[in-house]
Image (cartoon, rainbow, N blue to C red; front, top):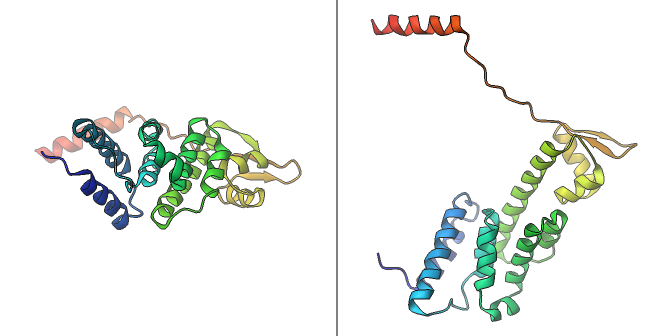
Length: 210
């Protein structure tokens, strides 16, 4: 099948987000396949991406999808002029950098440290919400107690806001020690079917069949 010209692919990429600003569940496959097809096309045709290619949106899509390796590859493959002159691209990659080095607090700083365009702000907000939920799950699985200060750092909130947030999740806060007791998720164990119940079920099925 003949590939689209890069200009047409560019338009399709922008339209995808224009009409689906909050439907990000398919971003990983969409962004990854888009990256591969463009790389192949560039190699075959000996052309470069257009200056108006939405690099920032492409980076943010890969970051949202958790594909930091592809985001790094995209950053490295960008024209130097784009990396030096496009502030939103630089801001998007700053999030990727913080994720790469596991600078949890730095991720939130990178998100809040730039005034995102209308095209990007919905995707950034969706990623921020997803990242906060992932970090909360990490704390829930890794800690039994943790300080309010550290919890605020991990979740990108002020200490007052994070106190309210964890209380809403059923965690216990000790104001005196400024420590939080984590409420663990209940462990679901697989229940084995009793032999007598299995026999009864077998007889019932036999009765229905005859």
